Image 1 (cartoon, helix red, strand yellow):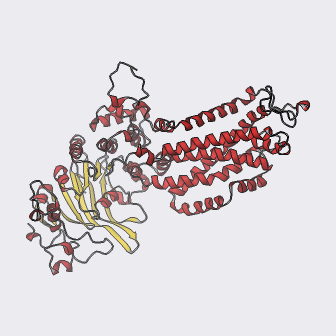
Image 2: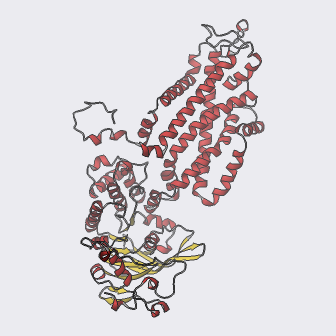
Length: 302
Length: 334
């Protein structure tokens, strides 16, 4: 409420009325989230990476695909900030374009995993007879390490960008489903659900309009983490050669092809690697911040 | 069913399948609520009073619960009488919130935290009466004013967490009455509120009843509240009605030892301190609904019990005008 500018108007509002309009759950959440400086910083880094990813085709200093046989494996210079790779292509331009692909994969995986996971989680949490079956299924999927399961799916589906999305989407669905089910089990027993039933709301209405909006916080937190994991796992898949086809400049592919040269040209690994670390780290910190901001125990303590 | 009755419950049986057997939470309860009347159902925890009200709304979780017998006759707005115990779930949905409103005990948690109170009051209006967003909002505003919320225009867009318990209970009442139901079921609506707010809420309910002519089924364990709001009283014990009657005669001259015990349990001002003024408590507790004793269910806790009380269950017999009690020895109860 301190953010309301003084002398903002001549209407004498009672002090409790100030900032009322911004007290929606979303506004409260943002205020809580940006209390920590590190989270603000990470959020800004995230936005910067996102901006680069969106604008990549127009702002790369060189054509990321253009080869230059004479300028092969050149260390960073004023012209090529991140140096050039084994075909003389500009590494900075490729890292920028790689951001586009890595973030696209991450985002699509989040969409797939969140949609599937939320539906499965709601089904398990609300329809009791389904609970056991669905949860054993997610247990089975979660028993495999992420990367192993993703490799298995990729082996079955064949390498392509969208198969990576599908594979990772399925790999991360159980995480969302688990979280949604657990929260759904709590919310379904809340008195306001009984009150909604007593007002004549139908079952779909209860589930999607009364329970689901109350699960948004845990879903949001999971989505942020899955975004980070997906980028990391996509890089790992590409590195292992079972991810996005190697001609596409994703960060994982760049590191994979740099393996052979990194003794002479360590910048080939350094810069895409830094891009991955920076992206994943900022996502994780924002995710952590979200989780803290949404933790009801901390809310009470403030 | 008489023309002036809104709700007529006949021989209601609500059972729960529990591990050791069948728990008869409500075992043959009959009472009626007249138009414009407030009927209070009183009893300890476990007496079946809440289960009775939830049965009337068909909100008993099934399984394990089931309405095993009896009729719940309800006269709708159109004057038609329906048996709610046998209505389809779909038809029941159009009764809930529309023809019967319900208020719960916990105002702090009975509102959805993610919607504004305006949206929540308007929601039922939108799906029961097909109002559009704007009309529902206008109606919600009118309801907020009606339940006495100051600065209703501003409060309309607030979230429940911005309101106090008393305010939220007013919002709950506004939600329950938004569709102008003919019956309002209030399940301990003031138990979670402090006494000054409690008095305001009771006052509000009384005023709204005068304005709208709604019948009220008031569930409570607080006899002070009963004296405030009720026209007639039903006292439940262990799933059965033990005494019922007009509020004055029942509270002035209770004819069942249990009712008398409940009244004696109430602390009152001017009570002497020390041993001589010890607060009375009914010894023992409500028997398990799975394994009720034979005969009078209250006999094990009753000072007046004699061997005959354990032999057979007494009947609910008239003890005065509009007053009956289920006790063989009602003449000895002062």
